[in-house]
Amino acid sequence: MKINNEFEVSESLDTVWAFFADIPQVAACLPGAELNEQVGDDQYEGTVLIALGPVKLEFTGAAEIVERREEDKTIVVDAAGADKKGRGQAALQLNASLTPTPQGTKVNVALDLQLSGAAAQYGRGMVGDITSVLLDDFAANTANRLGAIAKGLDPDQVASVKPASGLVIGLRALRMALARVFRRFFLPYRPATN
Image (cartoon, rainbow, N blue to C red; front, side, top):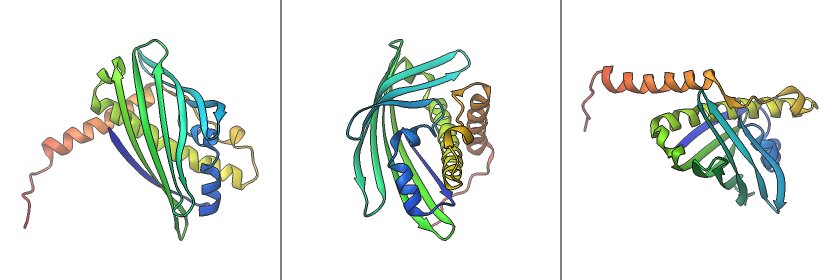
């Protein structure tokens, strides 16, 4: 499943590029994610916890920077993990690219997520919607952490990230699903023009 997100931050391209070089700091922007051990050059181990009502998935795994291109400010991260209770596996590839703007820096994130086992049974639509919500939160958390760093503050104290859990994520994902259904069934049909 491929999901794209784009957001803009007010910091300069060089500042944001330096931020993205610190992968545990970037991971801290994603609700429920924590990279707590560096096991090699550009290789990390950690956990991702997602709880939504009775559904609780806790993945342990590894992430590795497989490509870092200074010339076009692009980074590619591969990650894979397994649910601690053996209910499934997840693999993802994240591509982030940075471009300067008059106001700061635009961040483009492309995520390719693959789920297997019980984790995949929750439905492509629901998983896609929840992932989109998490990426929106990632964008807000990244902007908050960069803002804290720019002010010389400790980003862990100022821009704390909540775990990926609870009713709020479910309601936001439900709103996305309902909007998709509304567009499909209630917007007037528009024939293609040549």
